[in-house]
Image (tube, rainbow, N blue to C red; front, side):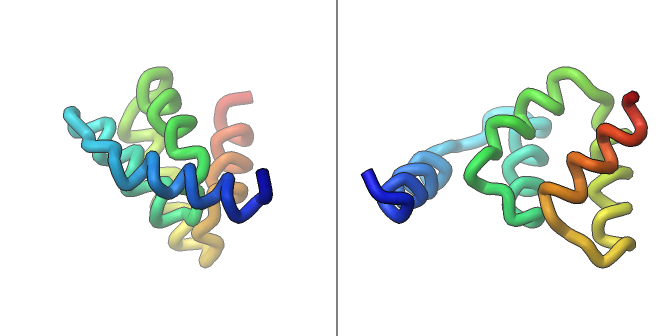
Length: 82
């Protein structure tokens, strides 16, 4: 399977996902805005383990830093949780 096919399958699975809780909605939107749709389920897990306020503040910090990427978000999360 080529990389393009894998990305197409991931995109299709995301397009079929319908959030049923506010946390799921936030996780999906956050992953999209950070260009991290391929691993949006990781964001779902983050919302299960961390306070919504923390995750949203880190998201806003990414935006304020001018680096709206999943990589930067995860770096910030590691910085505050270690």
